[in-house]
Length: 78
Image (tube, rainbow, N blue to C red; front, side):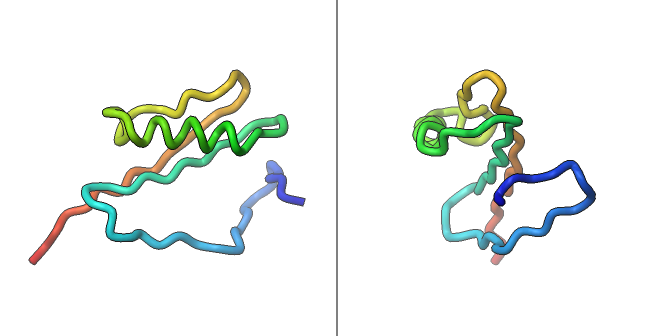
């Protein structure tokens, strides 16, 4: 069962590691009360990532599908 419940905390089995992408990395949390077509969401995310709004825009999603994101701005310190 991969659904999230409205109950307390939900721990994930994996974690993410920032890579060597320049400037920033952005993580999206996509959620809905209904089943999500993952391939269409990924296509929309890839399109947005190549646009001028990659750092502050939203993925264009069908009605009833929501998003939240975290942006990690990178700064080189020498």
